[in-house]
Length: 171
Image (cartoon, rainbow, N blue to C red; front, side, top):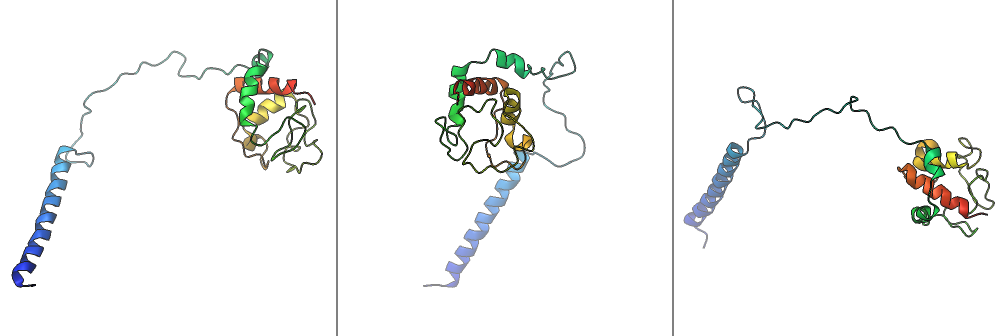
């Protein structure tokens, strides 16, 4: 059942497969050569010219928060509040985070019954619109040690609209 001819066929099959595999690698490297220094520089097939902008590539200056806040839309802020709704309520009851009704102009760490980390009062005294804007841009960066795990709102318009909406919630 298992003689020398069968063994020879099996070894030849493995050797043939290995040979085809190695030839495939060699052929692929010839066709799709992507690296290595083989005797000189290689020219790029084509170059895309990109015109330089006037002003040395400076970024556009961000509009000051006060200007954006003056024209903020509270109804748009209600949609932005959807990101906050997972942890905060507007009905006076605490959830994962403290309730946010009446938060604008409220003292920091002022909600009774909520266990604050203490990191906020080291950086802010009260939640003025300007302080809320600063905090909401990057909570972890502006108040290191805060237990709020939200990444922040990068758009100044979203922050202004959210703060305008929170002003309408009273308290």
